[in-house]
Length: 576
Image 1: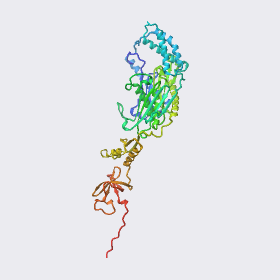
Image 2: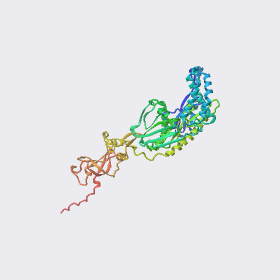
Image 3: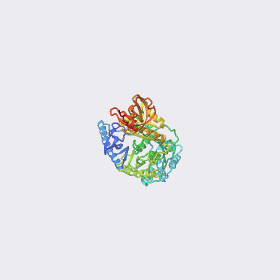
Image 4: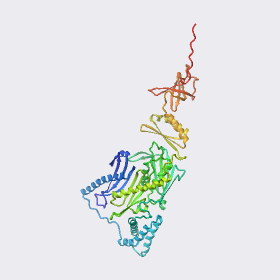
């Protein structure tokens, strides 16, 4: 676009900035991002930042602001290259934009007729969205009714100019009177109500309401079989944490078909997922596949942030030991670009998002930020304004966390009784075959006996065994059988074994699950045996002692006579 004659407010550019091992890097390798505690995508022009999105590991507002500064310096260089390219090409003259039809006389007439009335509605401080909407609609209808029946004004232009007048009135109330549509102060948060265990049959659930925005969120805990398989252009593997965000039309009072997932649902769900995944326990402490579903029941301002709050509460209700609770807040901005006068708004309404100049969502714990998403509609957003927005967002975030703590301050100590149990066991990889058994015989038998589901995965030169059971009894049975298989036999220890086969030279005894040893004919009794016939029976349980392990073959040598009292030696009869 820069080298064309298309009207354009650019050039613009975008970079990825990450802090890796304490150092900021621009556009790092994907392989390095696993070590990053800040990972941001930043877009902007030479003089302002237009978009920020990313995730962080509980970092401070100052660190995030510094990351944006580093990114903006790189953006300036890339923008300058585009400017130089356009100059080299020679296409620096742009076409004049003249595609709109306007009626200045109608615009002036509408502003004179409706601005003061719209200002009064905006300044009334009515906190009911439907009533405000009806009041603004009545002003428009009154103006239309005042027009002659034979007027020739374009109805589309009437709607456009009325919207412009309403927008200007709302913004002027904020800038001049420092008051908002619903009567709140600039940094005031709407009333908050929340409850956990709202759906008793779910593994975890919560409802979170802030003003006229409400999320009902559930947590479901599953096995390794429930992991999400991802086969993408840049990543191939599995995901153990999923968050789904549903935004039905009735949440905004609309009646329209519920179709497939749209960009809005994907974006809002992704932001909430990024916010919460930073506080999940490590995999070795959490064997579950976690799915969060947020259903927005009512929406008037940042349902994605309500999803973060409800998701945190539901995780704690489910007994997932998260590092810390996470809350989120949406910040807004009203700015007069001519005078530089501005107002930063905390916990914005839907109307303030639509009529304002910025939507800046920030999530985090009491310690720091975990994710953010920002887009602006004005040029020249300074770091001063950005810094004030972050500081104000922190205060709002901490206030919301305080309200959430009144409902549940820390995760439940245990899972709910109806939650399936899952446990991870890390073993040496040479035992994987012993647990599986020939043709899967051993693992299938454990699953039949216990009712548990067992999954085995080899990674990092270890075997990871996941046991999933519907109750604690089944879990304990399966785990004890697995631990018995992977237990290392100790020379000199006594075991209760079962005779598996009898040979002329001795018997093979299974003295531990999956481990057979040879009980040689000479080790059965102290008396000398001529054969094994009639000495032992198949399936008979006997006490044996592990006396040796062959260092070359690893075969076990057992003794039964070592556990029997040694007969007294009889002296030979004297000769005459």
